[in-house]
Length: 550
Image: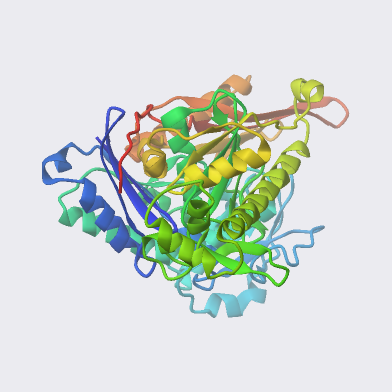
């Protein structure tokens, strides 16, 4: 049996699955002051004493990291960087970094070492909490990052995050920001992790506990402490996996997960969600965090309604509270959807009274509110379509067919999906599919998510070494080294990590590969091989959803 828990902006959902069947599901209010309280309340609604021993895994999709970062409620972070020559990084990081003059060139050769006499104040500094270190081209030679980390640990920092260990790909700015954000949420995430383990132990739940990642994979909660930034944007990822488990589309589709606070939008092609070509962006800063091609917009069923001077409306991003139809104190988008005839729940008379308080004809005003919400959502979808069409062309198929994404249907999940998705479908002239089990799709997605892990390798036959940055090890090459040997090395390392972290064994896949020939002294030829592999992401199995009234 699998237990999935998703913490949304309004509700926390929980499901227990057994071989693709939903045994129990619950929806409880999210407790923003203490997220764990809401998680445990939802858990207690679905986990009975007689099934505790049968639980094989618990997966949590939590907003704790996302909220802390977007609301800037994080600990101050000391960031040390080694930029080397030729790069201006001013304004590229969330904080002004401390500069150290160590340098590695593009081939992985150390060309400059830190002069520690210049950094006496740093070495005498008393550090607290977590910090981050990142060097340009450190993925090709991480030695200097290790040295700086060692000195910072001696200063008293509880944890040092290295850019080269968080991502094995080129892009110094993204790696550095990933290290910074991991350090920023480390203490918060550590406290959350410890409380979760204690709370589950009190309930005699001994099943492994995983956290969902932005790319739709999972990591054991204790392993995620080594890269907590990966737990950002897990809500949108959960909805994508939930759709894949419930009813993966066969047509080019746009999915919308409508909650009480936000709407999460994703694209689907050939039955699979599209991945972002680059890493996720956090607070305007690019990172190396892999994620789906998604966007969240601050419009949900509980969104606040604001009447503007010209008689039009603005919807969200603030959440007003429950709809007036179910006892709320002010009109919300859900009330407008009820009055306009898109959905039916609660007390229709109270919804009408709430909309009437805005003035004008009740039905006409409700439709204006719905139209305003739909306009914001469709504008965001158009921005995403434009962004996708502008991506670089990498394949012959892209040259022939182009990279434009042409949607053929909408898929809706979430508590508020039925009404708002119907209105968006009408505006875009697209059919709408609401899968069975849509109300708790996110919790289902979290429950069935596969564990994922990625790693890269760079080999230089001239130098005679290869490096897997995530392992921090640099080893000598064997004779005749090529693509097959490189893939075997990375695949073996990934499988070794699955054993150490007690993850299920699963297929690995190649996600990027580059091969460059080099010439030295006019005659000598060498090769540079770079590739990246991962445990194949996705879902463990399909799920048959069921309809339940909450």
